Image 1 (cartoon, rainbow, N blue to C red):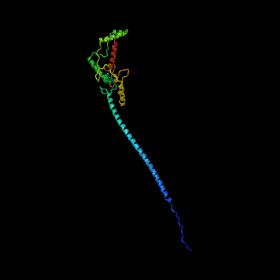
Image 2 (image 1 turned 120 degrees about the horizontal axis):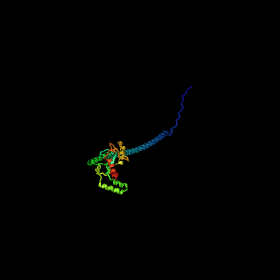
Image 3 (image 1 turned 120 degrees about the vertical axis):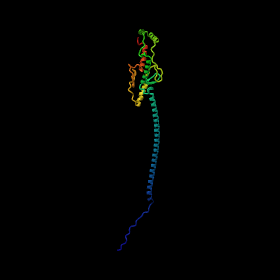
Image 4 (image 1 turned 180 degrees about the vertical axis):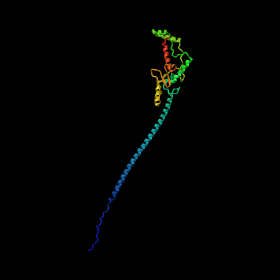
Length: 262
């Protein structure tokens, strides 16, 4: 028996079609389009972020200019405040002792001095006058004859006033001291008075500056000033100065109306 060689079946091949190469190209094309879309979106996002960044830079520039302007204005205001404070501090000082007028007194001419300097100034003028007139007594009333009091007692007011004026013409009162302003030397006819408005301003300024006010017992509406710093006035021992001038003016008024009978 002869054996013949075994033959394998012939492989069958199909002809290639045109769609075999199109599919990968289509996928790649679609992927390329997607990349292009993503890239365009990224570019648009970048442009938006860049514009926002430019807007922020512009806002920062505006804020920096506004801050510099405010800082400049603040420096100007600070310098003006310092100048005003220095000028105000000088104006609130006594022109004689150059200390803060915690208890200012206003003179008839318009100047203001502290109570201590005011009292010391008029004490000097009183003492100088008393040295020139040893018999001068600031508390002595003007004596009136008893006849004038009799006229006043029986109700003859007009005759009493005429009699008092006639008596004062015949017996003029003793020469009084001549008081002048401690700042301008102008002659004064009325006593100085406490400048309450200026006192309130000084104390408000001291509180804003943080300066402690001295232990000062200020004058109230019913009585004369008691103390100003180290200066004190005793109503029984003080024979000259502001307090005595006020008392003397009031006593002169009583004396002229005949309150003291001889």
